[in-house]
Amino acid sequence: MNKITKNRLITALSLIAIGGVLFFVFNNTNHVSDEELYNQYMETVNEAQQLFQMHKKVGSYYSNEQFAREEDVYQALDETFTDSGVDSLLSSVFKKVEGDLVYKQKYQQYLENLHSPGEGNITYYETVKNTLLNPGLPLIKEDDVAIYREDNKVYLAVEDASVAYYDDNSPNRNYLKRYGYPSGDRLSIEIIFVRHDNGLLKVSDYNVESSPPS
Image (tube, rainbow, N blue to C red; front, side, top):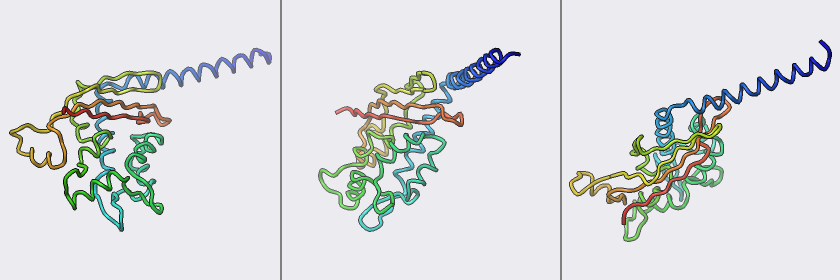
């Protein structure tokens, strides 16, 4: 085999190998079923919502006793979010004070209001409604979800889906109203999943919009 033929053979084998990897990634992304993606959406929401729980106050600030450092959040969300997805979620909920994570101002304000209720105070629902912390997100039905695939990305979209919290006869009506819940809401959601190096689909970006009826 002469040198030119050998080089051509090596080049051809390299292209076949690269094509095989690209086919594997594309094929894997497209063969994740809609049901699996919906289940992953629910897992994503459940994991994100743990960031605003288990409140404690140290000095002047409220924080989450489970997540004192950025590393704690990255570790907890490593299998669900990309680094950029975690960054986005972190920056929406927390800020750093002397190296520790504490809630951002609107969450601080809400928690302070719980101990000094008054007219015009910000409510829980008002605080979280346009974030992954919105309590209506786990109520989204699989039929409300549209899924689009593009290369190594999967887009999960919900357009103006209706969620109901209570009606006039609901036993928890007064409790939910106390925390600012409307009787129902209309939610639009977009979550972008990307195929990560280890083969998992992870959240790289998201958007939540709440439009409760007036």
